[in-house]
View 1 (cartoon, helix red, strand yellow):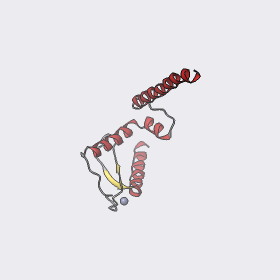
View 2 (cartoon, protein in one colour):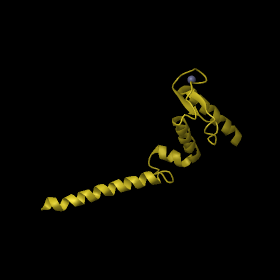
View 3 (cartoon, protein in one colour):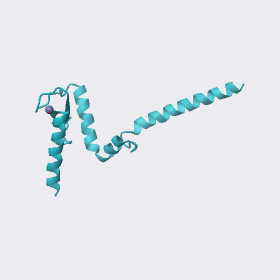
View 4 (spheres, rainbow, N blue to C red):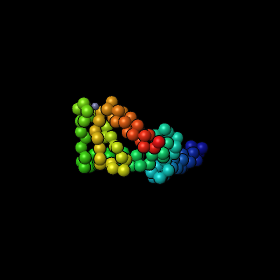
Length: 114
Ligand SMILES: [Zn+2]
């Protein structure tokens, strides 16, 4: 008898957690929880985040194609954006040269700001 009263309760909690899971994914676009460094970065850089997801989407749809590093020809490249407002304007660079590009970009932004 005790078992029978427990069963529906267990089911309820299960559907309950599924619901909250769905709700969390639905609202993740507008207000992501700032619990992880990534989520905090997303909140601080909404345009950069949008740009990166637009790039991923464009790659998936075949709108753009991944290219080799423009500096050393490495096949394992990241998309580098000089402006996150232009997700299709991409320079392809390996991790090493991507870091270098980011550093140059930061320096030019700092000199613009000051
Ligand atoms: Zn490279």
